[in-house]
Image (cartoon, rainbow, N blue to C red):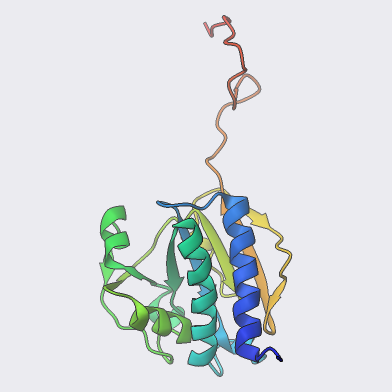
Length: 194
């Protein structure tokens, strides 16, 4: 049986999200931000021909991995909604995020955000977030929604459809200087700082 374009897109995003989740240690309580240009996935210039069918295929693949790992996913809107984030209201409330009012539609918010919004149980939009990891499908610039120290991750899946894929995980900032210790030795050292 031949694989359809929708099946191919779903398979590609599933592989990408699974690798990112494993590498970043995404689990319950962690947040993945996803920015997507369905136009780019379909081989067109960003913002020119969004496709809800593409968004549905991407959502299906992302949700498959989300179900396995338990992390939360938020979806970045396009610049017409100031890159607000679509998420379940329970996530917004748990994280104490600032809610903004809009309903994303394909021409104002983007097809991916629109599809995510309509598929959620109790959708809400937040102004911003500091996510633990990010997946950027089609160079939508998700960096503003990642925690402060982002580490680029080169996934095995470099394209989804025709869109380039970028990913990042985050880590806590390393503070201190040459005397700083970032991991405890197996046996406690009795040297103290004066």
